[in-house]
Length: 279
Image (cartoon, rainbow, N blue to C red; front, side, top):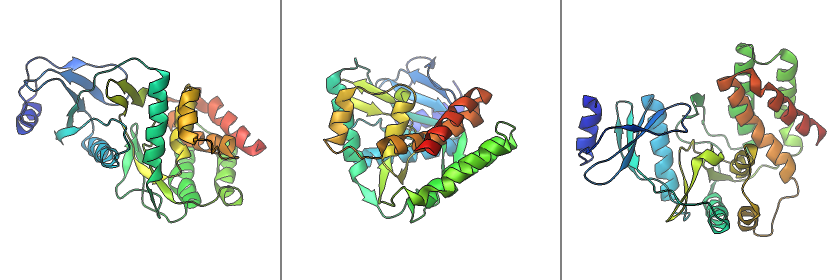
């Protein structure tokens, strides 16, 4: 075990009692489970700035007191992050309803500006979060336009598709109302949701403040929660333009997947663009 990790564990008051055991599911960081004299912990090894952004996000989610379980940050430095290990339980309709209620509580806390005091990352992609007062401008300037430019620069998108994405970005003011900004997880795909004996948990955030449908659209992008989740989240108040918002807020993560994983995601980007053009 590396000396810098041992020093961090000692600083956290932890003494390892086993070896680092790799955990599956991570595409970016190396993730391990480690037995210690205080119980098991999760250890991540990655770029120091990305881990600092993740730790900041976990603390913000925990402070929101939404009822969702958030792993406690025990310490971090030198490209290592040590967190509470969560016990995993079976998924159930009761758990999905609790996830919907907790996410609704998380999104209920709003601020005037969209963004976050620090930049972070979505996967390994830098995520600029400099605040803007208008949510449409934030989605355009901090999300869609930079990702479309990056995809074209890497040869993953031609100028025609980039122009279509830019037209959508510049047309947001025509249909998307400005609104106060909710605290959002920012990367809430199904793999970042765990069901535990204490209730549903959310992990690996890329937090900022923006439209709450960002989290919902990410949950429905790769699979979807069940009816119990949506009944609890919407509580009878489904926005009439939810399908259009879903398509919009799936476009940014699809562009990010195209950038990270290559041309296999181009078709999904084109389909999302076509949904928005037809709306």
